[in-house]
Length: 173
Image (cartoon, rainbow, N blue to C red; front, side, top):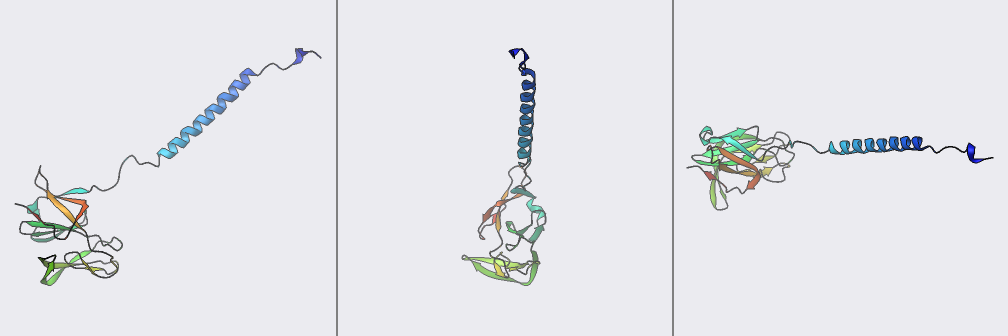
């Protein structure tokens, strides 16, 4: 036989097969990239670490609970300090209970007047008014946070990422 009956080259068919395979690979690559990108959020839903609490005049002498921040702010005259309301055991919100008689304790040589104690309703942890854990499963004391005064509007500002020692006090003049 002669070569006249040989199959002509399938240039068009090969081109279309390669084009289809390339489009399929491109589609799979784009879908994979979109799926991986969906794992990274566009917005951070973390709470801000610095929060304005309000003007110092809005805080009464004694204790004020701020439920949104889960924070107790204490005021004695022009002196303020902030104690976390988050139990160190499993993160429940502790509640403050006024003491019948105020107690005075020595804390690192400084005299501290306690008017409240904190109780965790979830598992029974108990804390003194300075946040020290007294009983229950709580492994450590309640955190104290740094307070400052905003220079632009004079409001109290708490930094929930900056824990301080129990001797920290902010005096507003």
